[in-house]
Length: 197
Image 1 (tube, helix red, strand yellow):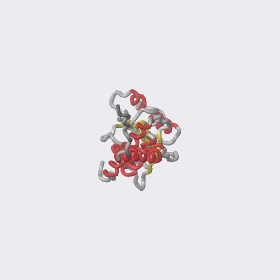
Image 2 (cartoon, one colour; image 1 turned 120 degrees about the vertical axis):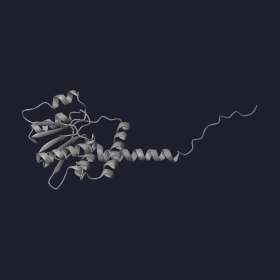
Image 3 (cartoon, rainbow, N blue to C red; image 1 turned 45 degrees about the vertical axis):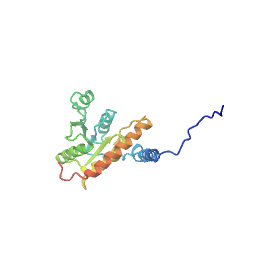
């Protein structure tokens, strides 16, 4: 009777595709944390209008209204991206005695569409400065788009994030960063909004 030997499977080197994926995810997480998760808001100052971008009812509408009540702007433009029977929008869009509230749906349901909508209202109403409110990780891309589609030598932007925490899992942060990078590339390809109404 011969020797019985257990045949073990020797682990070889990791495939190049796995190494590349790990490197991409590491790079995405590291740069995304720096550029998006830790994006810094601008200092608050008085402006002509406060623009609350659509996306999530995470306190952004209340924050925009609070800033207006504190005297930072007489008007709040709230992007209505939620549909006709949204209870939060029904509440925040009610007429107020202290602040003018404009609830409006942009033609394009994107940040670019919101910037174009804001520019059109600015041209009608003579707005020269705005505060734009969104998620902290969305601020860098929103800034780029509003600079391309709204800002001019006579119009300026203050970017502010919703005062909230983001208890995301690692996987969700990875997805969020990848989405922001992909959407930023799309915005770069689209370029400026000159000639678009």
